[in-house]
Length: 140
Ligand SMILES: [Zn+2]
Ligand SMILES: [Zn+2]
Figure: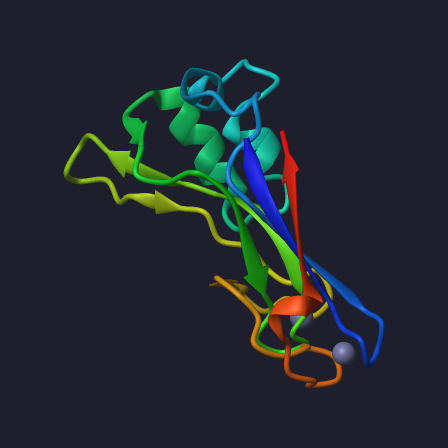
């Protein structure tokens, strides 16, 4: 089960959702299976270098890094918009290959997005967030 945080800005009334973790369908075997409906390719539709991921799953020469995979919150450095995307790292078994780490671009400005852990202020209007501006929710 994953956890989520919702930041609600009292000033501009905007909401920002942080979804972290995994759902019930995010099993390690399914994620790595090329012909599975629940594999990483499906999670990575708008990811950078998706064709490479396609080849990786087909080739079976990589393993999923178990330290962390699941949803994380990404932010565009330019327009500050926030989105939840599936994070994962694939470790190459062959030393000549490079590891593959999920990366996403902002759908508006095409900038590479950064992973963020929390928000100290509203990305839209700049108001500082306090603990009472944050709601917690569970999802699966
Ligand atoms: Zn605001
Ligand atoms: Zn952007």
